[in-house]
Image (cartoon, rainbow, N blue to C red):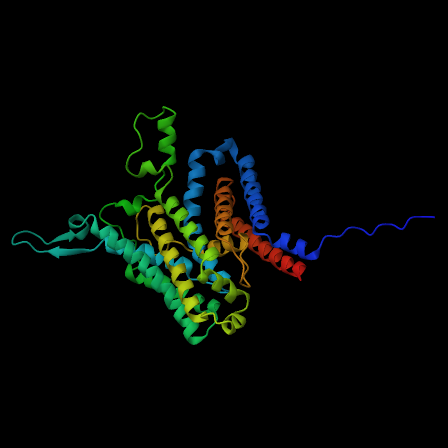
Length: 374
């Protein structure tokens, strides 16, 4: 007589679902993807140049611009929105900062030719602060214009921001008179993304007798520390505040959130204002990254990189999902792909194909995960 076989032990579908949705599991998966991408280029780039201290710092510097803008984009995507004008807002911020630093007047002396007097020479402390306020302020104001149009006219965010992408870029070119703006002298704003790690390594290893000066005490560029503080702030907002809960509620189901008493319009305005604020900070970093020049054609296609960073980091274009840490990891992956492709001498079109393919793959995985959870 044979014993009845024991029923196979099965895992509770609820447990499997919760494990699959676990934030730590998703973050671990994206961290492993970051390691794999880095090792790929570390092994293939000649002479180990990809692992040099200077190259690693350049990766961190460039990714800081994408990641800072991605903080706000994460909030927008969680709330089921999108912002295609983020690159143009960064360019507008860069131009406004340079324009303020370049403010000058003409003085006609009693004898001799007229002379240009730059305000930066008279107010070397106040004018850079005014430039920061103007740059970050124009970023927040631009994003508020996006939201006012979206909420007030009940238009689709994709269409509105597609239009303002051209408007803000054109405004930047108009302010700059379609030329680069060169402030008369450098300020601390143009140094916040200067390399600092290489001088420290040279001093610590005895290759340089002089200790790092200026902002060298930061060890890493000041812009990276600004990103760290901004990322902690954004993560705390999403996790521990009512505003964060409202973002996820709106992204999951806007009508249900409205019926539950969530102030949908007010929440969206706050979300886009924060996105513009982070875009303004990214604009300050970009201004420093391009050597303190007001270049209206800068940050072209940055909206692609920023959105890709959020999607790769676990953000769902359907809304209701996303994380700050994941977006920062996504920004690092995008930067490594860009810089690794350049060092391996990939043509630009190949880099664009790779990044586009990764976006499609990330969205596909997100859709497959949602189907599995059903």
